[in-house]
Length: 213
Image (tube, rainbow, N blue to C red):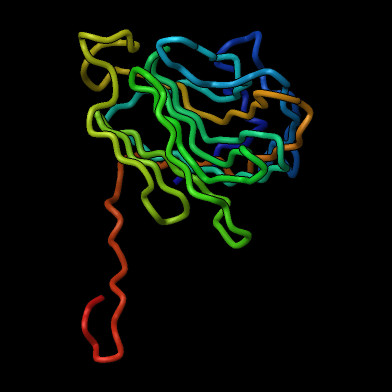
């Protein structure tokens, strides 16, 4: 596993006109910034929003990889780990404020957005992970998998970069936006990249009598 400091020269916005506002701290371990109002990532047949500010870098998918980051936010904001393959294939996974509460969640666009959420609790992990494999995607919150997509990535029949195979590329990084009012504080800590993927082994809980639960 490799930590990529936010002072690394590779960090750039996906779209130059929508750069995440902020600066690195603690020798690049943290990126602290503020959101821009009226920005979002969401795609349906009626709406295509892709102006949420980002920061990241491009890399080959190869045999697969994992990216992870810790998120810290205040209300009125979306903050997420972010992976983009094409305008119709991307994912944001993290913390979002909606209807007066903070939620853990993931939006997968493939080719249209869907949203899965659970209410955030005070003791919930700040860490989110995306596993990108050839034609497959997994999303973890802490150690728990919260999404799995079995057909995701470049193919000959979609608009994703490259072609089927190891040379397909993805933009990986972080994203923060505010569909309504902007100016909310957000920070990202310890962005890491791990080559390949190691299957998680689920913990087995034992009952009082020693039986698996």
